[in-house]
Image (cartoon, rainbow, N blue to C red; front, top):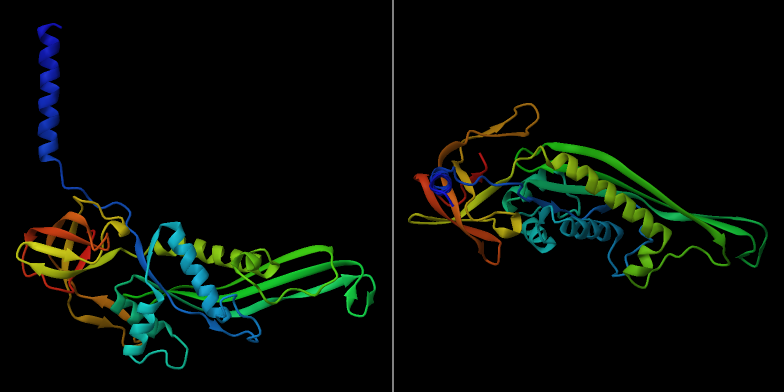
Length: 308
C-alpha cells in the first residue's frame, strides 16, 4: 500500500470523526400520536350485544381500540383512565360525551386526538327466493347486514372537530339456508365470521383510514412530568417512538385564547424557553423518557414538549 493511499485513508477517517463531532443533535422522527376512544352511543334498538355482553357502542369502540394498537401507529389511552377522568370531572353522567367534554378529558389525559361517535345502524335482514314451510326457507337465501356509525375526530388542544362523517358499510351472503340470521355469538370468531361482523370490521377499517389522514395535521406534543436539577422526565418514551438522542423544545403555557363567538379554544400564547435531549427512553418500561437540559431554564411540571 503506497503512502498516498495511506494518507487518503487517514484523511477520510479524520474527516468522518470531525463531522460526527459537529453533527447536529438527532431530531425526532415520526412519533405516535396519543388517542382517546370514548364508548360510542348506541342509537339502535338495543337488541344486539357483543359476545362479552357489552352494548354495541362499547363493543365497537373496543374493536377500534384494538385496531389502533395493532397498527402500531398510535398510543391509545386505556378505557379505565378515560372513565376515571369522566367520573372525577362529573362529565358524561348522562352517558353522552360532547366534543367539548371529550376535548377537556383529552387535555387532562395528555392526548392529541379524541374519537367520539354513535352507532346508528346495526343488524341484518334476510330474504328468500322460493317457498317456505313452517318457517323454513326452501330456496336460496340472501342475508345482508348494515352497520352505520356517526364518528367525530376532536383536536383536544382546540376542541375543534377535525372530521365528522357517517360511516356506513354493508355485507351480504347468499346460499341454501334453513335458519334465520344469527343474532347471538358465542365468541369473537363466531362474530367475525358472520355477515354483521364482516360489515362491522369494514366500518372500523374505514374509520382507521380516516384517522390516518386527519391525524397528520395534529402536531405531536408531550408534557414534563418531573424536573430535578438538570434532569427532566417527560411522559413519552420508546412506546411512542422516542429514541435516545432526540431533541425537544420546551414551552411554558401562556394565556388561553378563546373565540368570543364560538367559545372554542384557539390555543394559547405559549413561549419557547429551552430545549432538552433524551438520554433514556425506557423509563417506566418505555412510557416515559429521561432528558438532559440543553439550554434554557425555568422548566416546570406540565410544560409542553414539542418537536419544534
